[in-house]
Amino acid sequence: MGRTGNHAVVIGASIGGLCAARVLSDVYDRVTVYERDELPEGPANRAAVPQGRHVHLLMARGAQEFESHFPGLLDGMVADGVPILENRPDCIHFGAAGHVLGTQHTLQDEFTAYVPSRPQLEWQIRRRVQAIENVDIVRANVTEPTYDAGRQQVTGVLLDDGAVVSADLVIDATGRGTRLPVWLEKWGYQRPREDTVDVGIAYSSQRVQVPDGLLAEKVVVAGASDAQPVGVGMLFYEDGVWNVTTFGVGKVEPPQNFAQMCDLADEILPAHVADALRRGTPVGEVAFHKYPTSRWRRYDKLDRFPAGILPFGDAVVSFNPTYGQGMTMTSLQAGHLKRALQSDDLVGTFTTATAKSTFPVWTMNAIGDLTLHRASGPAPRWYKPVGNLFDQFLGAAETDPVLAEWFLRRFSLLDSLYMVPSARLVGRTVRHNMRLWLAEKRTAKQPVAALR
Ligand SMILES: Cc1cc2nc3c(=O)[nH]c(=O)nc-3n(C[C@H](O)[C@H](O)[C@H](O)COP(=O)(O)OP(=O)(O)OC[C@H]3O[C@@H](n4cnc5c(N)ncnc54)[C@H](O)[C@@H]3O)c2cc1C
Image 1 (cartoon, rainbow, N blue to C red):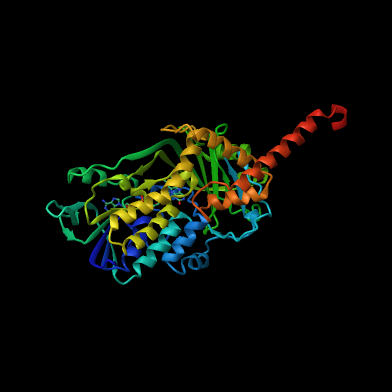
Image 2: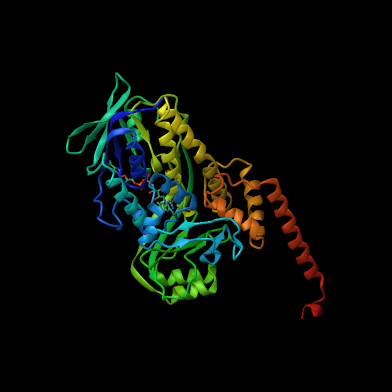
């Protein structure tokens, strides 16, 4: 049964709130988005989204999902200068958990990705939402939702100027700092269980103007590993400036200034990339950000939940940012919301679908974090062997382009959200590693004179 309504309110006009508003606008007569932050007239950073100053990777899957909600978005971004990656693997240098994937000139399947800065993507989405006739984006701080205990229903929101706005549905898209668990408790419900992984991540980012012609790449990633608890992500954005984010995992501090960033690049990036960076000119100041804990609020596990309100985006789950998944997973939630609005059980349908898409991604992240990235949190015994197997897989993917391409596509959340190789791929990994091992043994056995 379809749902129709008069007025929906969204709290928060970041990527999550804007996607929710787009979906709601098809169903509700009016949608009002309340945002406490000043919204710039263009692609610019804003105070309430401090993460926007750091590298944001838009996964290929996320680009597809956003396009499905905002047709024309991708072409529009390209027209505004956003770089695009097509089947040209020299656009990407990709290192994960200490392995560099051998994707050079080997991608077989269609692979298209877009590289907008975070402020650019939010701006592109926001201006499309602003153009929707029945949506208003209003600057206001929401103090809390209003709740009718008799009907066990949220009835609207209270703004901090004292105004009460009634609504048939309120979406909480206030990000990882959401107060919904507190409000639930106040209204006599249980707080959701929180699954957490203490990742202890610290970011430092510097925009850098690199002289033309030095880099063919548009995306350079060298993830952290157990042996090397610092990593780098470099993205070439629409303004022709590289955003260089360095990060430490497991409470290890990343470089604090540009000189230290260049030193790290010498250690973990290809020589031509490190050299290009050294020849670059820093633009603006270094930005810092701490991200101590990944958090999944398990609304899907609650027995009772009030009608008239839904949590959305990072308010439900905030993923380790070094894997670049948050915006894409939010775009998937928009699809879940669209389907849930057509069902009889809005809350149940949405929270179950969100839990289903979150589970594989959350679990794979947790395995990587807890076995390779010095994180702490509950780790079932099977995490370690799976982590070791995956390390073997990535080792083979360094020189086997088929495995590398499979990893790149799954990492981009294309094909499936599950990072589980088929039996055929596992067999290929074992055979590949066996061949490498035998070749190494043969080389070691040769007399030293023969090697000269
Ligand atoms: C350091 C870092 C790096 C990241 N890198 C990536 C990446 O590479 N790729 C990726 O896909 N994702 C990345 N993410 C995640 C991504 O930023 C989020 O998933 C994305 O912003 C969606 O979040 P959201 O809209 O749910 O919440 P947020 O972006 O946190 O926005 C919440 C909004 O709600 C508003 N708000 C809050 N309370 C109120 C109130 N009471 N009244 C009115 N308004 C309110 C805030 O002002 C804000 O605008 C990263 C995150 C971090 C922290």
